[in-house]
Image (cartoon, rainbow, N blue to C red; front, side, top):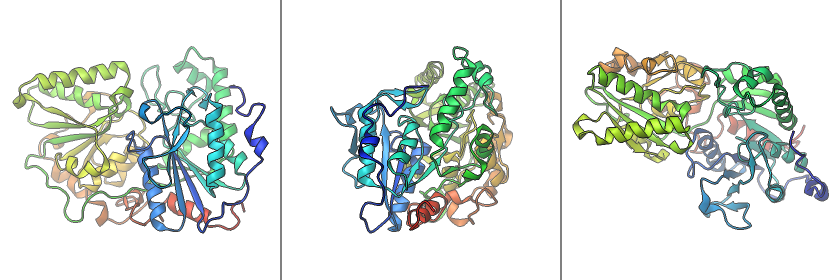
Length: 469
């Protein structure tokens, strides 16, 4: 176990716990995020930022955002800077992470810890909502409790990083299969250079710090069993689907092509998102002489893929660009921001989500629904639950190009009529959490309605007079 965070000269012990709110007309809520969505695109940070915007729009609470930044944004790092404002925006701050230990998930930079303590002392939030600990440190959770003993602490799990040392994906490194339960021996099999006792100590380390949390939330119900089996008390973890703003304009969704043969991938270009599965399927179909379709890749962050997958994707795209324009099937449009979704979605008839991991919520699935686009996805985890909510159409077993829907005749030969009845804009359907119709997560969240999900929970806690009662 790493050396204790609180060493001689402990700034918390020296200052004493901070109690009581900072004088303010409104309760204060601090949202802590992995990255800022305008710096590094990702579902967890997008959900957190839209919650921040939604809470601010209500006017009932005063929200603050603290988003971590790592070495991928070197221009933001200045000598002596640790927590700074972000781009001149009110109540938005960045945490300049450095010296991070990716095994114990803690910081080796004492001055960053002191800066976080000072930041909490200035903000004095009534509720602190962690959306991640990566690049921040799991021990910042218990530190928050020490500094602010009367605050409420919420923690939203966006994957299984607390459970799984393999980047939180719960994919077996031995054979690439999905893992359904962690144990010291099973984890040792994925990391043979680390003994089983190290995984036991890792679990105890995480439990120690997570014990400071008042309530945990999961955006998909299936996650709860994983975390309860791991050791989170069942009475402290609840399902609250992600809130999400609708970016579709009023009226009919974008028109589809007459042939319904345009497919789109949206998301991170990393191993678990499965873009390489699509490219392998394209090669298979091209080899069989079937070329009457187009695939548009919308994504970035290929630098985070493993070297083997990055090389495979780069080689395919380079070879595709070298072909005559009339022979190209795949085009790479680069990354995108949410305000570009309408334009990108209008270029495709189907969205493919070929993730090879559990895909906790699948933000791109709900984004596709916003624009009336049916989804072809893997049939595991959050993607399978999404498919069930929308009539079970269409899904495929995860893992290989032969399963990626490329040989599904309804998809490539005019099957729009089959999928269209279960794909309609979110604004026209009734809300329902994990039930029929469109889930509550697809309802507008940044237009003043933060009553959905976490917004309702946080708002209620923040306005309670007896915050720890």
